[in-house]
Length: 107
Image 1 (cartoon, rainbow, N blue to C red):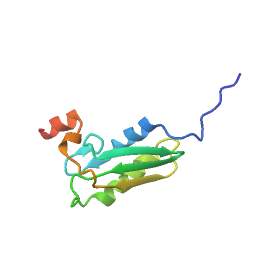
Image 2: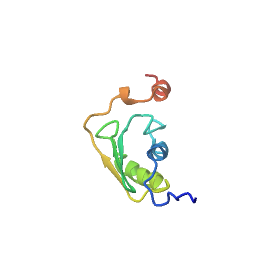
Image 3: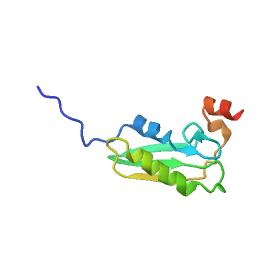
């Protein structure tokens, strides 16, 4: 009995989150996931929808971050298109950071 191949299937959610750990905030030197800036990842077949924010609406790195998300997540097996969406509601706060990020930044 032959095993079915899983080619052409949707990407693994954990792999997408792991890829997003490569997106670094240049000012803080920490990744967007640890900083709590990635709010949600939704998979729709092979498409990936990412909802993220910035530490401040005045932060100028939005276009750079959007491109990095597309670049890193598109390398995940099974990913078709990547759709990053920047939001400012709810606003980001340091409480969203991982314990490691809080420690690194002195929170």
